[in-house]
Image: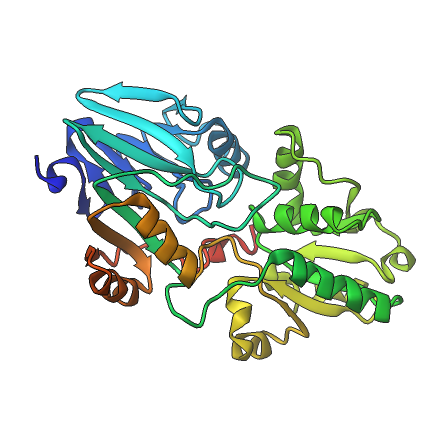
Length: 340
């Protein structure tokens, strides 16, 4: 059978005809398979949604319990058959509950990565390569300049800054889903056990992570803190809140931003970030290459990001490649969530 009989791009998103299902569709459909809970991949209004239990819980927190007509949970490694297609979800290592979608029919397998990373993350299951005939990948950071350092070294940089400036608050911009909780967990791994303060936009999802068994220690709402308690404290907020009146409650804050884009120092300067932290929940250039080779796929489709650059590398490595340039997916995965 042809690969396009199993999977094909359509305006709504990637479509599996034999299962009559879309993966991360950008508009309401009858049957959606959702890879993870970021708003550019998980939208409300579908008739039926299939996802991991954690992703369904995230969507319920964000959109309300009636976010779809019917929700169906599928745990990692469980197989579901729709018609002649077997569907299996495997960890993507992106955020809590994130999954790759493996579609198999007639001995042919396509694996759709969604967003993913290969760095360790204490808040979610690690990425598992899937042997397949077609690998569909993102390419957010598919340029040679993007080589993410270990996240632990970036956290150590901030903690050294706190030691140098013990009376100044450190205000860290971090996306509401995944990044904020990972940064908190990394602080705990580094031995920082003091209270960490949260902007109100981060509270609900952080509480969900803890209900799902992710230990984050003593986290407190900023709004309930006395201003004197915020001196020397670490606080997390959406990136968009760093330059708003909300931040004025902090005494002489040092601003930080946790993002893969902080590799580009001009972006940090544009945002007025004093302490850029290169912490990304997406695969960097070497990890994208490594992942493609580990799947053994003779053909790769690239959904969004620096698709042409990655396609060129694939062709040079002897792998057929197709840049899809799908519309509707943000480069850093959660730009629209910064104020949510």
